[in-house]
Image 1: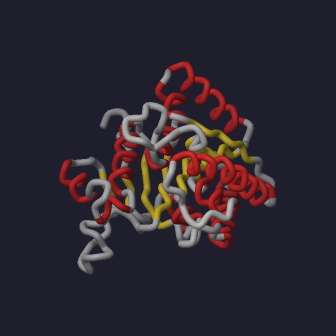
Image 2: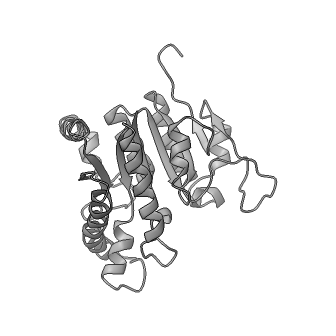
Length: 262
Protein backbone atom coordinates (compact mmCIF):
# COMPACT_ATOMS: atom_id res chain seq x y z
CA UNK A 1 0.00 0.00 0.00
CA UNK A 2 0.88 3.65 -0.25
CA UNK A 3 0.62 4.95 3.33
CA UNK A 4 0.91 8.48 4.74
CA UNK A 5 1.72 8.67 8.46
CA UNK A 6 1.31 11.95 10.34
CA UNK A 7 3.09 12.29 13.66
CA UNK A 8 2.44 15.21 16.00
CA UNK A 9 4.62 17.01 18.49
CA UNK A 10 2.89 15.24 21.39
CA UNK A 11 4.19 11.94 20.00
CA UNK A 12 7.70 13.16 19.19
CA UNK A 13 8.49 15.17 22.32
CA UNK A 14 8.29 15.04 26.08
CA UNK A 15 6.09 17.51 27.92
CA UNK A 16 9.11 19.78 28.39
CA UNK A 17 9.54 19.95 24.61
CA UNK A 18 12.68 17.85 24.28
CA UNK A 19 12.78 14.87 21.92
CA UNK A 20 11.30 11.60 23.19
CA UNK A 21 14.19 9.49 21.94
CA UNK A 22 12.73 6.09 22.81
CA UNK A 23 9.43 6.78 21.07
CA UNK A 24 11.00 8.29 17.94
CA UNK A 25 13.39 5.34 17.67
CA UNK A 26 10.43 2.95 18.02
CA UNK A 27 8.45 4.81 15.35
CA UNK A 28 11.36 4.77 12.90
CA UNK A 29 11.93 1.06 13.50
CA UNK A 30 8.29 0.18 12.73
CA UNK A 31 8.14 2.46 9.67
CA UNK A 32 11.36 0.94 8.36
CA UNK A 33 9.92 -2.54 8.83
CA UNK A 34 6.73 -1.58 6.97
CA UNK A 35 8.89 -0.30 4.10
CA UNK A 36 10.74 -3.62 4.16
CA UNK A 37 7.35 -5.35 3.77
CA UNK A 38 6.93 -3.47 0.50
CA UNK A 39 4.72 -0.55 1.52
CA UNK A 40 5.48 2.94 0.19
CA UNK A 41 5.55 5.47 3.02
CA UNK A 42 5.32 9.24 3.41
CA UNK A 43 5.89 10.77 6.84
CA UNK A 44 4.28 14.11 7.71
CA UNK A 45 6.13 15.26 10.79
CA UNK A 46 5.61 18.09 13.24
CA UNK A 47 8.21 19.04 15.82
CA UNK A 48 10.45 21.63 14.15
CA UNK A 49 9.52 24.53 16.42
CA UNK A 50 9.76 22.38 19.56
CA UNK A 51 13.19 21.08 18.62
CA UNK A 52 14.32 24.60 17.74
CA UNK A 53 13.23 25.83 21.18
CA UNK A 54 15.47 23.21 22.77
CA UNK A 55 18.40 23.83 20.41
CA UNK A 56 18.26 27.61 21.01
CA UNK A 57 17.88 27.11 24.79
CA UNK A 58 14.71 29.21 24.85
CA UNK A 59 12.66 29.16 28.07
CA UNK A 60 9.54 27.91 26.27
CA UNK A 61 7.55 28.03 23.06
CA UNK A 62 7.85 31.59 21.71
CA UNK A 63 4.79 33.84 21.58
CA UNK A 64 5.98 36.15 18.80
CA UNK A 65 6.00 35.08 15.15
CA UNK A 66 9.63 35.93 14.23
CA UNK A 67 10.99 33.83 17.10
CA UNK A 68 8.65 30.95 16.19
CA UNK A 69 9.94 31.10 12.63
CA UNK A 70 13.55 31.26 13.80
CA UNK A 71 12.98 28.24 16.05
CA UNK A 72 11.41 26.38 13.13
CA UNK A 73 14.41 27.12 10.91
CA UNK A 74 16.83 25.76 13.52
CA UNK A 75 14.61 22.88 14.60
CA UNK A 76 13.93 21.62 11.07
CA UNK A 77 17.66 20.95 10.63
CA UNK A 78 17.75 19.01 13.89
CA UNK A 79 14.59 17.10 13.03
CA UNK A 80 15.86 15.97 9.64
CA UNK A 81 19.29 15.13 11.06
CA UNK A 82 17.57 12.84 13.57
CA UNK A 83 15.38 11.15 10.95
CA UNK A 84 18.29 10.76 8.51
CA UNK A 85 20.44 9.13 11.18
CA UNK A 86 17.74 6.79 12.49
CA UNK A 87 16.31 5.70 9.11
CA UNK A 88 19.84 5.40 7.73
CA UNK A 89 20.57 2.75 10.36
CA UNK A 90 17.91 0.60 8.61
CA UNK A 91 19.27 1.46 5.12
CA UNK A 92 16.41 3.77 4.18
CA UNK A 93 16.94 7.11 2.45
CA UNK A 94 14.87 10.10 3.53
CA UNK A 95 14.00 13.29 1.64
CA UNK A 96 12.76 16.61 2.98
CA UNK A 97 9.80 18.51 1.50
CA UNK A 98 8.69 21.80 3.08
CA UNK A 99 5.40 23.25 1.83
CA UNK A 100 3.25 26.34 2.08
CA UNK A 101 -0.39 26.66 1.08
CA UNK A 102 0.66 28.17 -2.24
CA UNK A 103 2.44 24.93 -3.11
CA UNK A 104 -0.83 23.00 -2.99
CA UNK A 105 -3.36 25.69 -3.96
CA UNK A 106 -1.79 26.78 -7.24
CA UNK A 107 -2.11 24.12 -9.99
CA UNK A 108 1.40 24.45 -11.46
CA UNK A 109 3.13 24.40 -8.06
CA UNK A 110 0.95 21.51 -6.90
CA UNK A 111 1.88 19.57 -10.04
CA UNK A 112 5.56 20.20 -9.33
CA UNK A 113 5.10 18.91 -5.78
CA UNK A 114 3.23 15.83 -6.99
CA UNK A 115 5.92 15.09 -9.59
CA UNK A 116 8.67 15.32 -6.97
CA UNK A 117 7.04 13.26 -4.24
CA UNK A 118 5.81 10.56 -6.59
CA UNK A 119 9.26 10.25 -8.14
CA UNK A 120 10.81 9.99 -4.68
CA UNK A 121 8.46 7.09 -3.90
CA UNK A 122 9.38 5.42 -7.19
CA UNK A 123 13.05 5.74 -6.19
CA UNK A 124 12.24 4.00 -2.88
CA UNK A 125 12.99 7.09 -0.78
CA UNK A 126 10.92 8.06 2.24
CA UNK A 127 9.62 11.64 1.84
CA UNK A 128 9.31 13.58 5.10
CA UNK A 129 6.90 16.50 4.75
CA UNK A 130 6.28 19.50 6.98
CA UNK A 131 4.83 22.96 6.53
CA UNK A 132 7.55 25.54 5.89
CA UNK A 133 7.08 27.23 9.26
CA UNK A 134 10.14 29.42 8.76
CA UNK A 135 8.27 31.45 6.13
CA UNK A 136 4.59 30.53 6.57
CA UNK A 137 2.57 32.03 9.42
CA UNK A 138 -0.44 30.73 11.32
CA UNK A 139 -2.25 34.05 11.45
CA UNK A 140 -5.95 33.89 10.63
CA UNK A 141 -6.67 34.77 7.02
CA UNK A 142 -3.12 34.28 5.73
CA UNK A 143 -3.29 32.61 2.30
CA UNK A 144 0.26 31.25 2.55
CA UNK A 145 -0.39 28.89 5.45
CA UNK A 146 -2.05 25.48 5.77
CA UNK A 147 -2.02 25.90 9.52
CA UNK A 148 -1.72 22.38 10.94
CA UNK A 149 -0.40 19.03 9.86
CA UNK A 150 -3.65 17.04 10.04
CA UNK A 151 -4.94 18.93 7.01
CA UNK A 152 -1.49 18.88 5.39
CA UNK A 153 -1.29 15.10 5.70
CA UNK A 154 -4.72 14.69 4.06
CA UNK A 155 -3.67 16.96 1.19
CA UNK A 156 -0.47 14.94 0.79
CA UNK A 157 -2.54 11.74 0.77
CA UNK A 158 -4.67 13.19 -2.01
CA UNK A 159 -1.58 14.25 -4.01
CA UNK A 160 0.10 10.83 -3.86
CA UNK A 161 -3.06 8.75 -4.25
CA UNK A 162 -2.56 7.13 -0.84
CA UNK A 163 -4.49 4.03 0.19
CA UNK A 164 -4.25 4.86 3.88
CA UNK A 165 -3.64 7.90 6.08
CA UNK A 166 -2.68 7.33 9.72
CA UNK A 167 -2.84 10.19 12.22
CA UNK A 168 -0.80 9.40 15.32
CA UNK A 169 -2.17 11.51 18.15
CA UNK A 170 -2.26 11.68 21.95
CA UNK A 171 -5.68 10.01 22.00
CA UNK A 172 -6.78 6.50 21.00
CA UNK A 173 -9.36 7.67 18.46
CA UNK A 174 -12.73 9.40 18.22
CA UNK A 175 -14.95 8.92 21.26
CA UNK A 176 -18.64 9.41 21.98
CA UNK A 177 -17.58 11.98 24.61
CA UNK A 178 -14.39 13.39 26.07
CA UNK A 179 -12.74 10.33 27.70
CA UNK A 180 -10.75 12.59 30.00
CA UNK A 181 -14.00 13.81 31.59
CA UNK A 182 -16.58 11.07 30.97
CA UNK A 183 -15.80 7.55 32.18
CA UNK A 184 -18.62 6.22 29.99
CA UNK A 185 -17.08 7.58 26.78
CA UNK A 186 -16.76 4.84 24.18
CA UNK A 187 -14.33 4.59 21.30
CA UNK A 188 -15.99 4.76 17.86
CA UNK A 189 -14.24 2.02 15.85
CA UNK A 190 -15.47 2.95 12.36
CA UNK A 191 -16.92 5.99 10.59
CA UNK A 192 -18.36 5.89 7.07
CA UNK A 193 -19.79 9.40 6.91
CA UNK A 194 -18.85 12.72 8.52
CA UNK A 195 -22.19 13.98 9.80
CA UNK A 196 -23.02 17.29 11.53
CA UNK A 197 -23.57 15.29 14.71
CA UNK A 198 -20.06 13.88 14.44
CA UNK A 199 -18.58 17.34 13.95
CA UNK A 200 -20.47 18.58 17.00
CA UNK A 201 -19.10 15.64 18.97
CA UNK A 202 -15.52 16.56 18.07
CA UNK A 203 -15.98 20.12 19.24
CA UNK A 204 -14.62 23.35 17.86
CA UNK A 205 -11.01 24.44 18.42
CA UNK A 206 -10.73 25.57 22.01
CA UNK A 207 -13.22 23.05 23.38
CA UNK A 208 -12.21 19.96 25.35
CA UNK A 209 -11.74 17.67 22.37
CA UNK A 210 -11.01 20.47 19.95
CA UNK A 211 -7.97 21.42 21.99
CA UNK A 212 -6.50 18.04 21.09
CA UNK A 213 -7.15 18.73 17.44
CA UNK A 214 -10.12 16.41 16.88
CA UNK A 215 -11.94 19.02 14.80
CA UNK A 216 -8.96 19.29 12.44
CA UNK A 217 -8.76 15.50 12.26
CA UNK A 218 -12.36 15.33 11.05
CA UNK A 219 -11.50 17.94 8.43
CA UNK A 220 -8.61 15.73 7.35
CA UNK A 221 -10.94 12.71 7.27
CA UNK A 222 -13.31 14.53 4.91
CA UNK A 223 -10.47 15.22 2.47
CA UNK A 224 -9.10 11.68 2.68
CA UNK A 225 -12.45 9.91 2.41
CA UNK A 226 -13.47 12.03 -0.59
CA UNK A 227 -10.47 10.76 -2.56
CA UNK A 228 -11.03 7.12 -1.60
CA UNK A 229 -8.39 6.97 1.12
CA UNK A 230 -9.04 5.33 4.49
CA UNK A 231 -7.91 7.30 7.54
CA UNK A 232 -7.13 5.99 11.01
CA UNK A 233 -6.69 7.97 14.24
CA UNK A 234 -4.53 6.07 16.72
CA UNK A 235 -2.39 6.74 19.78
CA UNK A 236 1.19 7.62 18.86
CA UNK A 237 2.50 6.38 22.20
CA UNK A 238 2.42 2.84 20.77
CA UNK A 239 4.08 2.87 17.31
CA UNK A 240 3.78 -0.92 17.06
CA UNK A 241 0.05 -0.40 16.42
CA UNK A 242 1.03 0.57 12.89
CA UNK A 243 1.45 -3.12 12.08
CA UNK A 244 -2.19 -3.82 12.98
CA UNK A 245 -3.45 -0.72 11.16
CA UNK A 246 -1.58 -1.60 7.96
CA UNK A 247 -2.98 -5.13 8.18
CA UNK A 248 -6.55 -3.79 8.44
CA UNK A 249 -7.10 -4.90 12.02
CA UNK A 250 -9.31 -2.74 14.27
CA UNK A 251 -7.18 -0.17 16.05
CA UNK A 252 -8.25 3.35 16.93
CA UNK A 253 -10.95 4.87 14.71
CA UNK A 254 -11.01 4.05 10.99
CA UNK A 255 -12.70 6.44 8.56
CA UNK A 256 -13.61 4.47 5.45
CA UNK A 257 -12.84 6.18 2.15
CA UNK A 258 -15.48 6.42 -0.54
CA UNK A 259 -14.71 4.02 -3.38
CA UNK A 260 -16.02 4.23 -6.94
CA UNK A 261 -19.61 3.03 -7.15
CA UNK A 262 -20.33 3.77 -3.50
